Structures are given as structure tokens and as C-alpha cells.
Image 1 (cartoon, rainbow, N blue to C red):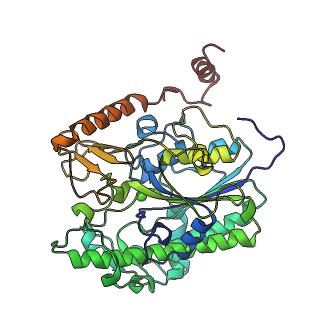
Image 2: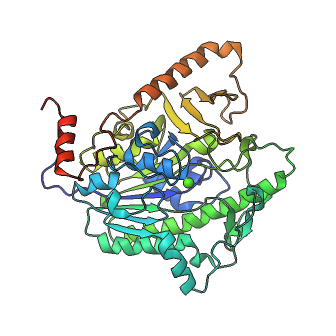
Image 3: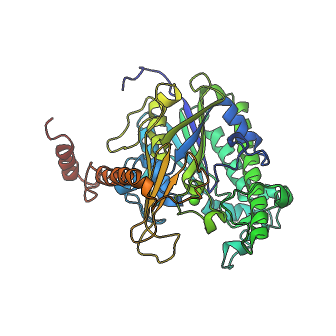
Amino acid sequence: MARTAGSKPPNIIVYITDEQRCDCMGAYGNEVIQTPNMDRLAARGTRFNNLFSQFPLCGPSRACFITGQYPQAHNVYFNGVPLQAHSPRLPRALQARGYRTAQVGLYNVEPREGHYHGFDIFRHQEREYPKWAAERGVTDIYPYGGRKRPADYYGKVDYPAEYHAASWVAETAMEVLDQVRDGPFFLEINERYPHLPYVAPPPYDTMYDPEEVPIAPSVRRDREDFQAIREMHAIYYGMISLVDHNFGRILDKVEDLGLLENTIIVFTTDHGDMLGHHDLWSKWALYDDDARLPFIISHPGHVPAGTVLDGLAEQIDMMPTLLEMADAEIPRGVQGTSLVPMINGQSVGKDAVFAYQGYGEYPDRIRKRRQMVRTREWKLIHMPGAESLLFNVAEDPCEMHNRHDDPACAEVLKTLKDRLLRWNLEAVDTTIPSLFIPGESEEAKAWIRHYLDPVC
Ligand SMILES: [Ca+2]
């Protein structure tokens, strides 16, 4: 890609919440939830309606984001699995373009060390927040611990919202913005909420009336705990409004510093939350409830404002998108494709998107290994050794009617299975073996140069 000599690339802020359903934002059509700041960003930028995670689980999902690779290439199949040393990394690629890079919040990609991924500044919530909270008299930051079921996990926390971790994240991010304001900078903010358990400080715990919160038909009304699910939804909404408030503080800070015009701002999440839909909790499932992500990108004068795109896109596309917008080199091995043509109206998006889930041989329904292929009309969730799911998502957006065994769908099923197989063949890492670690030794470097450029 041609670079403009001497030009100063735009700053980049990526704000990633944890476990936020796509339908839980005003900008995404929810008329009850109050998310004025997320909506403010959507009004300034372009919002994607059909962007999907490639692995709806914290660590693997964030590995997809940072590497621009499918799980078969980055090999992070569960939380705590270290990212391979040779995998591409967004912050490292931006460092090479002259960016100062920073991370604030709960970081999920192992190893949890900034320098390894290419972060110059690394503010880890797990290390800093407990001390920050204790200084304010809050010592029991996780008062819900020890309970067994998600259905038991809801209620309020007893400390004020300004001492909540979301507040620490916002204040720390603002502090970092003061440090890096001269730019160009990349600031990744990893916000831990609205991850379950569903608990919120006042006033967010009672901000929503459980009777007024919309519940999709894919939550069975005859469940014994249906009322509890309503109450959990209400608190979950409150958690998102708490996050929204703190996200707004960061947006205000960007404006106060006069950085708005030259800063790309992204709002997204790592995956959704089942919240009782399809009788499931948490994530893992590959329904749209957990696999579909909110994704909003703004950059005044460069990204159309108030625009909504319905085309299909993948989480692994975020990394090359940002690199293209930064006029930076896209590292070898990146499998995502830039969303800039979609943003500019020159592409309608992908014709299919993919996702992976599961590890080991868990007997329970939710963590069974599965893979997803989704086109504009159909979605197949293929589960080896279990009941697979086929939905006509165009006609059945809540994914209520499994057509897997419908003879009328045999041809569609075959086509989608073929696509999944092809994806599995193509999604593996084709760059270098993890045995060799770039930077380890001159010998390894020489071998890698030879391996990567055999004809040069
Ligand atoms: Ca997560």
C-alpha cells in the first residue's frame, strides 16, 4: 500500500465491552435501553448490523481481533492459551507505523504482558483496580462470588457507581489520553462489563422495570425462572447504561483535548450473552445472541456519519481495516479483509461468515464443539456427534425453527457443509511454524527470511 510521505496518521481508540448483546443498544433498535453515548458514536459514524465474532469466548475472540486471524491460525482455543509469538498483532503493526500504543482494562490475550503484544503502556485492571477501590473504602469488589448458577447471579452491589471498575477504566483511559495526546496513538480499552453475573451498583440496579424490558421469543415463557430472567435482563440493561456513562466520559475527553477530528473511534464487544435465550447462558452457542457483535466506527470526514451497513463482516476484518486507515503495513498471515470498501460503499460485504466454538470433549450441550457458517439467508451450526442446527435467518431471525432435517433444505445443507469444509482447509496458518520465534536468534531469523521469501 502506498504511504503518504510525512503524513501523520490518525489516532485510534478501540473500546471493547465484554459480553454485550447486539440488540442491547439504542442505535441497534432497542427502544428501552438508554445508551446515549454509544448512540452518539453511531450518529457520527458507520454501524455494522451483521458483523460476527469468529469465536465467542473472551480470550479467543480477542485473539481474533488482535491478530486478524481465524482460530485455526492463531490457535487460541480457550482462555489462558498463550498467543503464539509469531502471530501478527495489531499494536505491534501500529508501532511499526510510529504509533504509541496503550491498553487499559481487563486484558484477556495471554501472556498478559504489554511488551509481548506491542503495547507501550499497559494498565491492567486486575493489578490496579483492587488497590484503587480499596483506597476508596471498597474491599469486597466481587460480592456475588461462590454461587453456582447464572440464575443466582443477579442483584446489586453495595458500593457507589463511581467506585465501580468501569469508572476506573474510564479514569485510567483519560489519564492515558493525556499522556499520548500528541499522537499518533492507539488506545485499546477493554471494559469488563456487562459480563455476567448480572450485578450493578445503584442507581443502575433499579434503572429498568423488569416488566418493560423486551424479551425475545427465544426465551421460553414457560420456564420456571422466567420472572428471574426478566429481572436479570433489567440489571443487564443497567450494567450497559453504566458502561455507556463511562464510555461517554472518554468521548468527552477526546473532544476536550481537541482530538475528535483526527481520531478513529471504534465501539465493539467480544461476544454477546445468551441470557436464557434458547435455554442457554453465557456464550459459546453461535446463535446470533452471542456471535453477532455491535461494531461502530467513526472518523469525521473519512467514515460516513449516521450510516448503517447490513452486509456480512467478520471480527477478523477489524484489524486490517484499522491498519489500512492508519496507512500501515498489514502483516503476513492476516486473514481478515479491510472493511474500508464496505464503508465507502464499494462492497456489499462477504457472502458468508464463519465461527468456531468449543474445546475438548465437554458433555454439556453448550460447550460441545461446533462451527458456524452464515450467509445472508441461512445459518448452519454444525456439531459433530450432536444435533446440528440449520436456520433460515432471513425468515427466522430469532433462530427458532431448526430446518436441519427438513428434506426441502437438503441442497442448502450440503452447500453450507461444503463451505465449512473449505473454510477449515483454508483457515489454517500458512505463514511460519510456531517452533521459530522471530527475534530469538540470528539463525532463526535467517531461516524465517528464507522460509518466507524462497524466491527472493
Ligand atoms: Ca468475554
